[in-house]
Image (tube, rainbow, N blue to C red):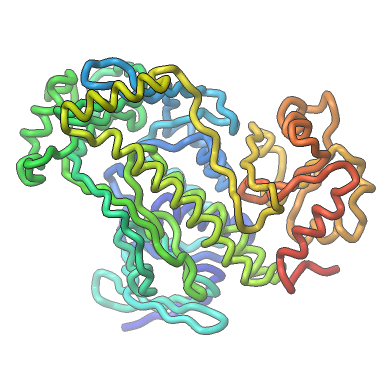
Length: 499
């Protein structure tokens, strides 16, 4: 038996955080989205345990900002400690971060997925089909067809203008599209132990990396009353001997975690990888999230990177679907996100090479070198990485931190200026309106003072044009705002909006 469904604008394969955020962002722009997910229910075990302030802002743009405080707990900081217990790295997190959200948030991933699922259920333009595994993909010049099987073996055919694979590390979409991966060969096995604490307990800092050569160990929050310990598999130690409940309790005991104080929700050995797809677009098929990249967990950027992917992609797909930009705009997705994520993978590998040292003498040398170079001093978390290529004006690409100004402005392009409205012609205003852009005039003493005004002053600019994913397209000095707007419109290609 086979069934054929009505054509959607976009097919999303995978309903994890990346797929759900993409579907929500597209639906909020009026697009018809079909989501195909092989699991019948939300996967009950956590994978990611945290998201940063920038990602919280992107999640809020997907419609779940009000629910985030209920499923997450702000983290206080992240420390590395050597074998002697002395601090090597000390990052302090603020609950009032630069993006209007806490700098770091711990969470139970299934709770986040349930929150996103409820948001999708409220979107009339989204259909989520669970229990379906994609087995075939074909495409033409004007669309994509996906064939999926249910548990009975019956096939279902889905059509759309575009298909995005958000189906995880073992992506079927990536395999069917025959997209090769670049693999750095940096891989270690770790025993992961998720526990529920019987009594509330405060951990300061929230997240801790024990750089002990006897057994590198990671301790992180995982939402309210949950915590994760990860223990590195040592040289000469097999994953099989590490992978047992008895071993989990033995390794947890020195941390005060016993069957009397906690419930072991799960334990199991996983292998980290450092990989990225060589192409993120093949015709009308695109990749995002773990389907496009995998990185070691040491910077906590795996899920965050996936949400950045789809936040970059959603508005571009919307413009192309609406005929307001040439489809070549989608080539900037690979250009921007692959380079961005490659940097995150390399940074995570660099951290891992420092952490995963099991030779005592080498670890002592490492600790001494870190302290000699200022290690152990308290610092703030790094700022979001700006774009340096793609759809940006030369010199643009910053990530704007706007606090909750986002709540007052419709999603889309944002032109913020200290110049009078007449600096943009009526024609340009109409073209910006066709892009769904908002033009905001600010002046001293207005609510944005101290935020956008400081940003403009620091750059000697009178205007800033911000993309829907909060990256800066470009800035303009006084009198140059019209040229800034024209530059964006020209970059959108032959299908530039018209009156």
